[in-house]
Image (tube, rainbow, N blue to C red; front, side):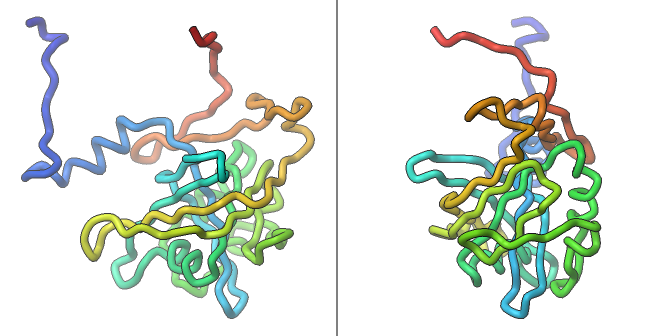
Length: 205
């Protein structure tokens, strides 16, 4: 066995469980960012980014995002999605990445992150949850289920069926998305992000 064949092994079910987040968030990369828009019953808007997010099915079209807890309460986006039964996903492009970062803070529940980040909130066509006007694409979603993962302070996974898709014409090439024009941003570990314009093609066998 050579040095290249040797790998450290971490038992995340045992006493090395605390290493899990740092390891997994560094290895499962790049991750798409779900910029989740929700609204409270009193009309206060909420917007927060989640890198534990993905598209998981196309029939029906389904996305998921997962949130943990603040020290004193569940993540607002998860709680409001459950309360209202809906949410939006707003694509994070290079043009709005700084605003996304502003909305990532741990704010009080009555803070409107749209106003805080200088973003324009527009209503969905079939959901009341707000869309980010400055985002190049938006998904209107209806909550289909919420699954609790782990113990009381564990994460909650929100499943949403995509009902409507809004896409800026400049990022479309016919009916396909031009990824270079979209300029989406992905999440790495720590404070790192990645641009998605450096890509290559592989033909399937």
